[in-house]
Image 1 (cartoon, rainbow, N blue to C red):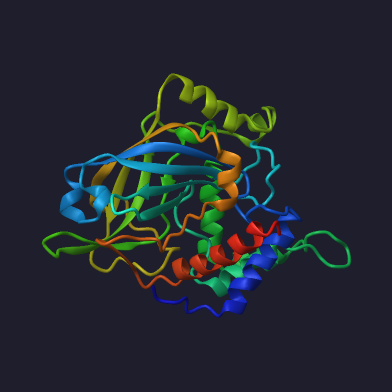
Image 2 (cartoon, rainbow, N blue to C red):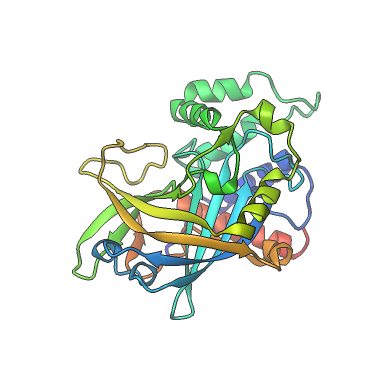
Length: 313
């Protein structure tokens, strides 16, 4: 696996800044701290084999571990606050290894590089003297970074899902997909909920129980699996594959990759929270990284974060 081009000091500073923003929560992730671990099954669609030779896209059922989460680093955050939600899926492959897909409820990402991400996080820190956020820091950053401003605008269009099972989730990064006949093309993942999308305003969501997303998911799973379609948006010539802030036009070809059935919440969900790592660079034969600098930086950050929480830090 190639190493991140971002200096380790930058990655370490990102984690430290995330922890400052979230507050002290020993044993939890610095972001996406409030999560639910589930189990399920994925079946690749017939056309997926034309896109990639990856084992989990060939058709037979593949066991999966799924984690829904809030983006905040506070594990006690109210489910009604406007924020990014995530869906991470770990495919347990026949050879005993696994592969991961990470996706968020908002397309794209605010920044293109680890250094810009650190700058964005620091803009959100409170002033050391007043203990309050610096009033113009975030607006100034957004004014200088149009992609970050556009990301926030997309978030506010769908601020709170009514259900983890009724949100679409989008892979931020492009990957190269290689088929058995050596055809190669770039694409981005999208998870589409079978139940359709449903979102709440922050005002309506704030009136619900602080853990309503977990309770709603538990109730939903008592009657039937929660189902998502996995699709792949293929890049056309000239579409940037190394810039996570650049969305591709909606008219790009979309290929059906398969169907995910979330069947239940893991009985060891709380323990799984500490040990599980979902990593965008955890790939398998048939899928490769692009030149995007963020996945490798994320992988390095997750390694540091895992060490922290495994030690209760």
